[in-house]
Image (cartoon, rainbow, N blue to C red; front, top):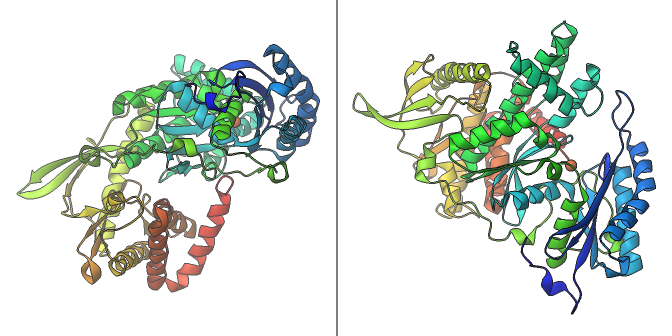
Length: 570
Ligand code: FE2
């Protein structure tokens, strides 16, 4: 980091800031100077006995005993008196309430006694910023994979935008859950990695496990249950670990690719405890080669919980005047990653996807061709060396086959879809009509704050028409599975406008209210990420849906609300 904090220095005095991390099992303390250099750092982690997970109260007691000595040790090693500190930062959330309160109390005490500014830092932001700084990537797509979190994000407009996330448990917790069920003990990730590597080296067979990707969201509960069942049915543990790890990481690769395709981000990074996994790193490097983009892999020690990441974000907050009065410094156990405003991210904008990237989807290349004199596209699902060959072949074939079936059924039900001319499952290719229409996304790219090219009436009409089309689709017993602005095309305006749904790779047949709600949520969430007019657009999509399925609406709307509460720290 450059010497961007030197202006804060009183004459002849260097700015030094102390960071205290305490969200879960690790208490970390670090002292940094105005350049961001670490002068001293130490941490102390509670290790629960045997096969148990961490107990919040016991972890908090551990931190309460450790925090005083750790702060003194770090200040001594940094040859800094507490009266020389320019500020103190602490992990304000998300995390376990009792642990958060210990770190917060220690920081408040220092702030009050030394009369120095207090900075409350979002723990997830600290991980993400540490990854950005250590890899020197300005605006990468970020995979944040830890015990409690699994998210795909990009820095944008003063914040981190969450593109997708786990809708049940974080991957690290999924590994721990599996580890406890199979007697591997707590903090199972490294043990699973070792056993999986052994199975891979021995050429052990791969077993299919549930693979759950919904748009850019993932879920891990099903895979844990199925993997545990494989083990209790007698399958050797290394083989189960191998299949579990390969499947879970393949899901992460897919949502990362969807994020790259959706944002046009030109780089990729990863952080969180699971980012220490060597196989995950290998897969990410392979993914970067496939996309021709740099992949920044932060040193493992910076991916796990530590005091430095809190201190470094604290420095930025201090510079930007993002500090807290003590009476407003309560902890936030469910502090979402997209909430804090981060002034130093100003100017970090992704460019609108180029015309070239328009033809590069997350899982397929789309080649414009002429077929019997008609404008067409050849959609070819690409081989992905980044994932296990069996998962790769299965996913490509299954998606090609199901895409053809679902498109055919939707067209038969009068849903506007491009005509399907031909399908070849073995070569994982589809030959499809090329539409002369505009991507919904392009309308939003025109101006990040809205659909300026359309007048309000036209916009309302378009959004309602889209909502109605989705409802008609659901009434046929079909969901699209990836309803974002990249998969909706528009032709005409006003009452004559036409909405086309394209890219049916995640489409399937289902009558479940859960599936309908998730399908609709992907669209609504995509809209709401696009400023104030995006919110208006989403509300009109809901109205259009309601108009077609008024009786179904209450159930879908109820489930939508329930899904929102399921998201991490909603
Ligand atoms: Fe963490």
